[in-house]
Length: 225
Image (tube, rainbow, N blue to C red; front, side, top):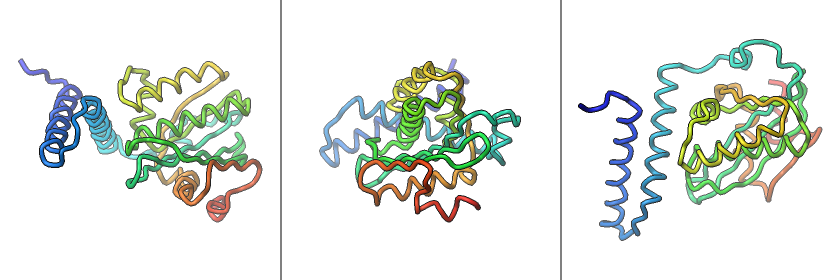
C-alpha cells in the first residue's frame, strides 16, 4: 500500500523531478552528472514547496507581538535577519538589524556570503551570522526574527536535515549553548522591512559593513515608519 504521508510523497516527487532535470542537463547541455547536485536540488525543492504550503494553510502573522505571544520580551535583544540570493552568481547577501528590548535601534550588520543559489541556505546563514555576532557582543538573551517560515520551523523542530541549509541550522542550534536565552520567531515581510532593505543594498557595498549606534543611510528613512 502506498504511504499516505504527504511529506514523503512530496520528497519522492521532488527527487524524481530533480533526477529528470539533471538527466536533461546531461543529455542536452553535456553538464556533468553529480548525485550531490540531485540531492541538493531535491532538498531545496521540497523546502520551497513546504514553505508555500505553510503560507497557504497558516496565513501571515499580523504583528511582532502576535509572533511572540506576550509582552514579556523587554529584556531581550531583538535581532531581525534577512537574506537575498544573487541569481547571476553563487553568492548572496545577509543582514541583521538589532534593537534593544525597549525598541530603540542599537546596531546593524551586512555581508556577502556564498549560498549556491539556495534561498533557504542564505536564510540559514543569516541566522548563523547573527548568532555569532551576538555571541561576540556578549548579548546573553536574544530573540531572532526571520521572514522565512521554513527555516524557523526547522530550527524549532530540531529535526535532522541533510541539505546544505540543514547543516548550517545545526550549527545555529550548537551556538545556542553560548546564551542564557535564545528563541527564533517567524514574522511577515512587512514587519521586517528594515533588514529587507539593508540586505538589498548590500550588493553595492564593498566587504562586510557594521554600524553601532549609527543608522545605515539606506534604511534611515524607514527607521521611524
